[in-house]
Length: 556
Ligand SMILES: Cc1cc2nc3c(=O)[nH]c(=O)nc-3n(C[C@H](O)[C@H](O)[C@H](O)COP(=O)(O)OP(=O)(O)OC[C@H]3O[C@@H](n4cnc5c(N)ncnc54)[C@H](O)[C@@H]3O)c2cc1C
Ligand code: SF4
Ligand code: SF4
Image 1 (cartoon, protein in one colour):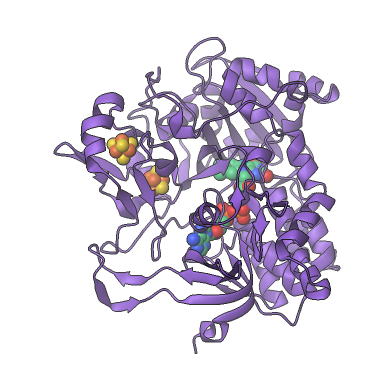
Image 2 (cartoon, rainbow, N blue to C red):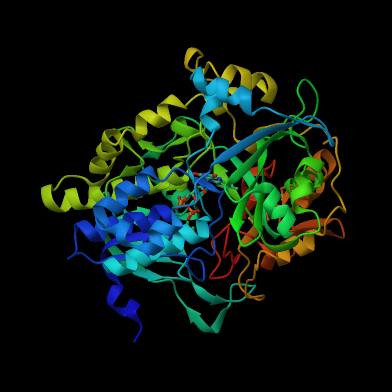
């Protein structure tokens, strides 16, 4: 029997089985065991669409575990999972394609002086893979009695404007062909009725953004993003020993940024060990780059070839690859209902984790806050059940009581300063951000892309191989989930002015030019990162949720 048949009406519906959504579901079910709690996710299994860096401040997870699993310390699996701490963290400035120097002492000094730069240090945090973290929290949610459904893409929140309440969430249709014609297996997207809706879709959520556009929610400033490109590489025993099983290496500079020169892209790289001779390599590039020919994937290749990085991974075997966005706008980009004075929610709909934008830009961390927002969402459901009141108001109060809103406010100007002044001056001024006014930022695609990126990473590695290692797949003849709104803009405006940047920036090599026409030719390669939707200079690409498919991450 299809379990879902019993779940067309639920008390709590969570969209997204990442750490935020699963924590919310498990917390709600722990506090209200009689309520039905259901999570839906577009991925084919736990952790398949989740990708992160490797260091995690587990304080909010402890808070969640103490609430939902008071005896968690007796659980060997959880204790073991959380036991790998960052013992030694080293920061390097890559000053050119072959030179580097250590900047760890500078950051330690910054930490002692309580400057923003010092907050990036992660010594004492836990080294994790988010796919594994998701699987651990998923198992706990299931143990509590939460129902979780994969291959269930949500299409939109069905919001009744008369009653000012969400009825529930409508699923995406399945079984349409390329032309939108119903196939034999066609299933119309059903409505899951829900008393409480918790959105936990991650960065640039498809349902979330539509909901914000059609509800009372608004942002003070637009959301801006970075794209992280990542691989997990199996290296030789000597290379693994050289990095050390508890050491994290972080990098600034090449190939993203050169002080007082070009390029100037905010971001950085990292290497960290995952056990069993596996090293994770990641390079994060802020999407407000000004280079029309910039490719985050090629920059990642240049980074991998820098001698300071290559010595740990050269000759290794790539096991997995992927790419994902990070929301970086911070406090002023968190949607809020100004009429009802609530953060990240309105009426019976809450926004948690990355889809609400709870990434702390001083620390450049989002995992801990994703767990914290999930926990507060679960508590808000319980408070509403016990004392009544508005779900969104309860949640907003809990976010304030937990200290999260203050934490986000303290880091509220940092990323804006970098966007305004560029990386070199911005990083310096960012240390005294509390003394500076708030600068307005533009959407990433409103940054004029007039310059050319000074390096080329073409041909260093095979991008098709990178895509293969993401495990991505979609049913070939399904309705396209990427749509170019006006092909003439591509041909007559973008090609002439910018040389069609989507051909370069898409990490999945989805876009191709065929006889003067640019289009999402290889839709089945789409990694769901949504860079194209956010960086196309004409906002000419629409990403919609596909009926199924996407990457198949296992250890990202
Ligand atoms: C490259 C990179 C490095 C990072 N490094 C760090 C770090 O070192 N430390 C740190 O603390 N944070 C880091 N972060 C941030 C951190 O990973 C995120 O803040 C965190 O994972 C967000 O969790 P989430 O549950 O909100 O979203 P996600 O993990 O993105 O989960 C969202 C889930 O929703 C599902 N979903 C989306 N849309 C739909 C839909 N329409 N229907 C159904 N399901 C849907 C997705 O499949 C996914 O499973 C990094 C992020 C990236 C990308
Ligand atoms: S889709 Fe956007 S980036 Fe690509 S060619 Fe068209 S307008 Fe340019
Ligand atoms: S098509 Fe868009 S969402 Fe898909 S991988 Fe390329 S940039 Fe990312």
